Length: 152
Image (cartoon, rainbow, N blue to C red):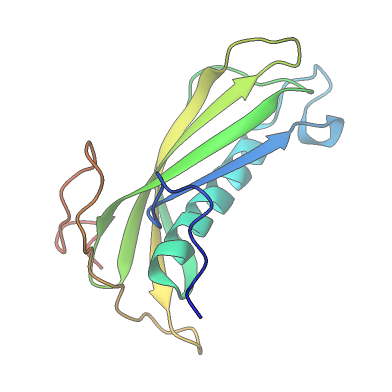
């Protein structure tokens, strides 16, 4: 039996998207979403992207950077786009972009971006080699490099 087609043919295993409505428990008393709530969503989307690519357990090794550009509020739909940009021996580097969209037909606005590093793990939790990228990443992605800070 053949494997089912990917539900989004234009997307490969090198991407993931997560969308969530922000609720009062995600925000401070003034109605602005906590940065930690956004970071959790970013880490989740990046982890899905890494696991989808590696087909192994993965763990966050580092948040190389996380920039908060504009605030999100209760009721906003937060969409996190995660994209694999580099593969090392056991590590994967994932870039994320976060957008907020108001409930009243507001255009999405970029609220955050960042870079997360994950490690591929075997079934007992030890680092294991990540699969090499074949075919190469989509247009616009950084070159694959097994060396440097994310080449663990």
